[in-house]
Structures are given as structure tokens and as C-alpha cells.
Image (cartoon, rainbow, N blue to C red; front, side):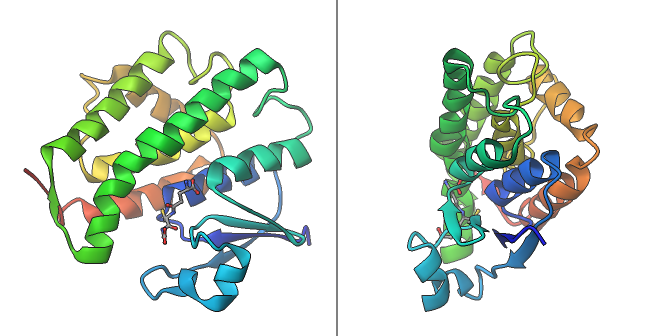
Length: 219
Ligand SMILES: N[C@@H](CCC(=O)N[C@@H](CS)C(=O)NCC(=O)O)C(=O)O
């Protein structure tokens, strides 16, 4: 066994971006489910590993890394046969990092700011402001893609994995209208062609959308 353990839930977008990376790197790993609704992420045992009590958490033979963006970069640096998924070239890396931080600070936060109040306090209304954050996220992705097949150009990177895991989950709140965001829709379709996409992200994203889409109302 590789000794790599990923703690998470398949409905969680950042967990799925790690699964996409692990599969792209053809790494074997053990998946340990953490039931957030049952509070398993706040047990003493889990908090010792990740005091921030978030999933995903990676345990690579005792090396603990959390935050999906840190995890995907770590995995490519440690196990990638090439640096293609997370380039070493400073300029290329800066572009990938920009998209990763965009996911961490804007795109995923647009999602979390809707789903956390629902799961924690049963808030079922989506304010205009929160819906606008989702629209802005789709819009920025459309701009980033430009004429390219992937978010930073001709090459698939971890930025595609992180942003796609979130973008494929956002239709839980607001449909991704192909007429408005044709490049985003085509990019997600392109990623679906990856042989590991369905298992690593497709199934979990559909589960997430199905779980939430009829529970929430746009104001
Ligand atoms: N920036 C973090 C976000 C992780 C995150 O918010 N995960 C959610 C599930 S999707 C979680 O663990 N929520 C429980 C909590 O924050 O206590 C990442 O990319 O890993």
C-alpha cells in the first residue's frame, strides 16, 4: 500500500479536487469517510490531525496536509513524474496559483457561503448577493478560459481540478446556462472525457446537486 489516506466525503468539492489529482497521478490511496453531519470532523482524534476541522485532509505516511489547494500542489510536487499539472516555471506557476487562489477565496466561498448556513442552520434562502457571487464566479471562469481548452492555456493543471470540482457543484444553486457561459460549459464537458473524471468528480458532483437543488430558493 502507498500509505496515502484521504479523509473526506464524495459530495465535498475540495475533496473531489484531491481525488482528481490522485487519480491523474495514478496513485493508490485509502479513502476514509468523515461524516460532517455526525460531527466526525470535530472529534478529538480528527482535530489532532487537522485543528481547522475541514475536509479534505491528506495523511501521506504521517505527513498531514489540509486545504485542497495545498494538497493538490503537494501531491504533484511529491509524486508527479512531470511538473505538467503544477508547473515549476515561475510564470506558469503564478498563473496556476492565481486560479487556485481564485477557487479558494471566491469560487468555493460562493458555494460554502450558501451551503454552510443550510447545513448548519437550515437557511434555505439564497440572497441576491450570494447568487451574484455565483454568477461572478461563472463569469470569471468564462473570462479566464478565453480561447484556451484549460484554465491556464493548452495544458491541464491542478487549477482545472480545483475550479471544476467547485463549478460542477454550483448548479445546485444556479444553473450553468450554456448560452451565457459557453466556454465554461465546454470546458466541463472536456474534463468529463478524462477516464477518471466520473469516479473522482462526476458522481459526487451529481450527488451534491441532487441533494441541494430542490431545498434552496433564490430570493
Ligand atoms: N479551503 C478549504 C475548504 C474546505 C472546506 O470548507 N470543507 C468543508 C466541506 S466542503 C468542511 O470541511 N466543512 C466543515 C468545517 O469547516 O467545519 C479546502 O479547499 O480544503
